[in-house]
Amino acid sequence: MPLTAAARPHTTDLRGARRPAPLGAAEAEVLRIVTDARTPVFVTVRADGRRRYSYWRPLDSGTGRGGCYVALPTAVCDALHAAGRTTLGEPLADPDRITYRVSATRTPAAPLHALPRRARAA
Image (cartoon, rainbow, N blue to C red; front, side, top):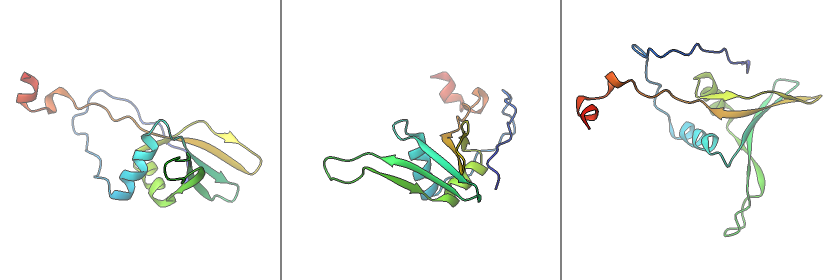
C-alpha cells in the first residue's frame, strides 16, 4: 500500500457527505494515541517496504513502566490512513528508511442545516 495520500479538495458544501464508519476498539485506541499532542507517532518505511508505526512511551514514575518505544498495530494504522482518518507529514529520508510523522485529520464541523431545530434555537 503506497503511503502517498492524494489531496482531497476542500469544500464547504457538505450536502451528501457520508459519515465515517464507526471505529472499533483497536482503531479508537490508535486514534486516541495519534491525537494526543504529547505523544508524537511516526511511521518508518524500510527500503524493502516494511512499515512500522511507533511512539515513545515516557517513563511512569509511579509504576516504573515505560521509557521505551511502542509499536502500534500496522494493519489498524494502515486502515485508518486508507480511510482518511490520519495523514502523513513531510518525509525524513535516511539511506535505508523514510520516516513520516502521523497526524489525525481534522473533521469539518457539522453544517448548520444538519443540526436539529432545538440546537439552533439555543
